[in-house]
Length: 248
Image 1 (cartoon, one colour):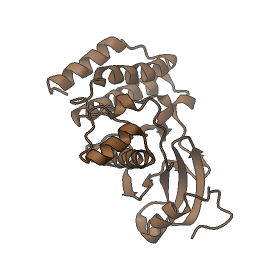
Image 2: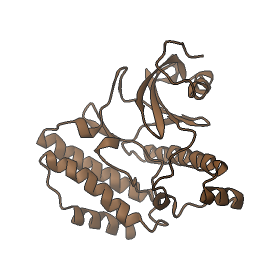
Image 3: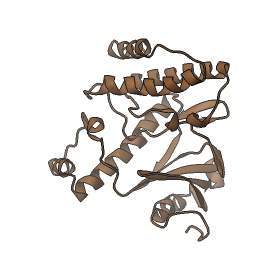
Image 4: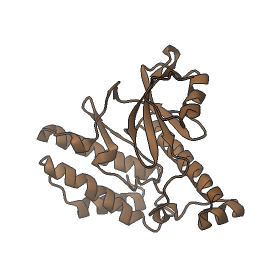
């Protein structure tokens, strides 16, 4: 069990205990970030895990449903009972949707990591938690790109790498759909894209172009402040055309 003086909320203990019992982590963890949808912990890893520290993302019992509709369109729920519960936003529906979002994030991270995208390596999934690679040091997690000032040369290289990641995502039939400098981490000269529960499949979502365009606008605004000017419309058009004609 986790030590009493560890900086943790009481409710996620059982979720982290599952990773402890599976031999991934020891009983020491620290809160890295707490938000309305999840709390992220830095966990001391066991020697046999191959890591010094791991990140555990513990999801809230009920994810916020605000503005979720555009992300859910195109996703299929086979059970008619669960589908009705989700549509009515009952407690059962909310619990089912939370599980679906969590499982979706885990699967997308596995797919993207396998093709070489700059995402955390996912390691395990619990009932309401996801265990993955940790970037940073204890007490000093990798900062979001939003808080980093880059030299122009490095900014140009990182922007090009970010575009390559967007191409990789599209080649995997995926659009992040909530990309911004706040969910791109910067560590030791490289980027790491996080937070994929809302990612959509552009083959089935009617909002695919809109969400891709918005992702690009968000990141291009940041890189413009670092001295990298980009034609957002042209870049978005090139990526979308490449996806449509499978030339990425």
